[in-house]
Length: 273
Image 1 (cartoon, rainbow, N blue to C red):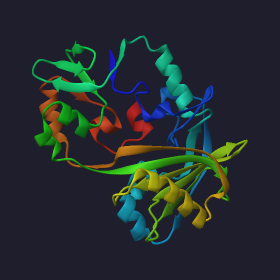
Image 2: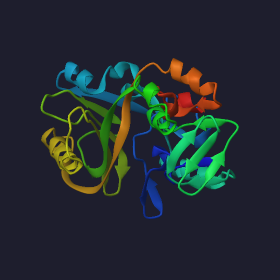
Image 3: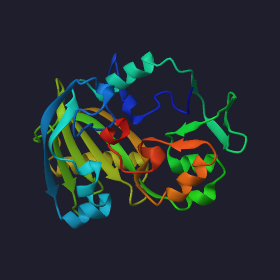
Image 4: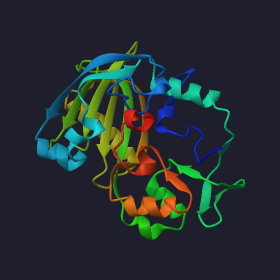
């Protein structure tokens, strides 16, 4: 049984655009490692550039050389948007599904409580953000060991001088945007992703307009923006030792899985394997 508070169940669900979908985040893999894409991958050359001092990039994003954000060189991308494969997987799944806000998780009684019903379990595989899971399980004390930095992700279609599959890390002071990816072409323009780590508090409405202005000032986007979608990533950079938490949950029938569930820097290859 699949229980989730969001029908999409993952960032991989993408944005709906008519009968098609657009990925919320850029998808790069180190190899043909994920059954989700059924071998339908193509190899591309991902270039990386840095605008401004590297110390500024590290202040916003940490050490990108050791994270999935910094992957470059010969990588693989799906032939179609990743969201198309993920949605097809959801349709094929025969598991019972409950999409309802989770009100609490009783680890002693082994019950997940939602607005609509209570679900008993023998084993619970958690892919929800670990910090969120602990608060719902009345283990907020353990969640104090975890730290995180949220981010704002903007997806847009516009003109850009960047080649397809180019990453630009921005270290200039006074710029909120952390990195930009030119991902591929559409009839209306190129697909561009911008990630803004929220190291400072800002109103969400201000962030979108400010990010577009910064992209134009950096000459990474040109002309009118023909499509814009955005979402808030609460757990963008995750820090903290989870070994004690893992042992505590394992003794209560909970297995941690996925990037957010294991609270780790994990690529799609890591998760699929």
